[in-house]
Image 1: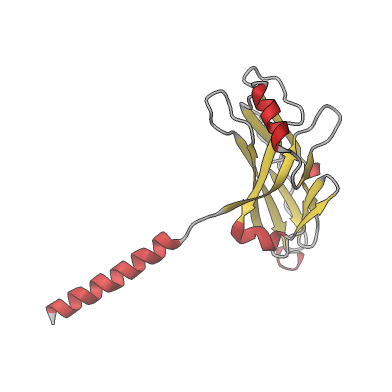
Image 2: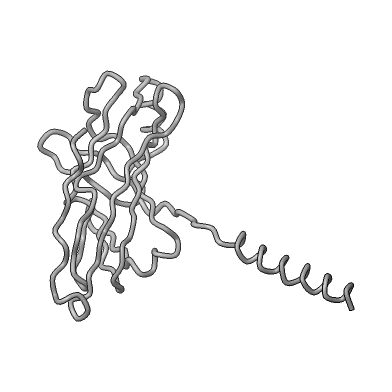
Length: 178
C-alpha cells in the first residue's frame, strides 16, 4: 500500500511539474520598421530592408545603441484601428546621434497574433484587435550595438471594450523622460 501511494504521488507530481514547464511565450516577427527621418514619419511593412541594405549599413559600422518608442502605452476601443506610423520611433548611435531610417523588426506574441488582426497597408502595419486586453509589441534593432547586443523597445496596445468598461479607453501615456 505504501509503495503504491508513493508511485501515485510521484506520477501526479511529475505530471503537474511537466504542465508548469510546458508554458512558453513565443514572439514572432511580423514585419519591419524604419525609424523616422527628419520630417518623414515611421514606415512599417513586410520586407522593408533587403539583405544588401543591412550588409551595407554593417560595413559602414552603423551601430544602434538605443531604440525609443513613444507613446509606450496606447489605448483604443475595441473595433478601432491602431497603426505603427502613429508612433514616434527613433534609434541612436553610441554618440547619441539619431540614425535616420534605422532598420528594426516588429514582433508580437504568437498567442496574440490572430487576435490583433494585422493589416499590411502601404508603408504601414495596422492592428484592429478583436478582443479587449493589453498587447505588447516589440521593436528590435537589426544592427548591433558596439558591444554586439541587439537593442529594442516595447510598447503596449491597451484595448477596452466599451460595453464592459463604460465606453472610454484609458488615455495614451507618453514615454517617461530619462
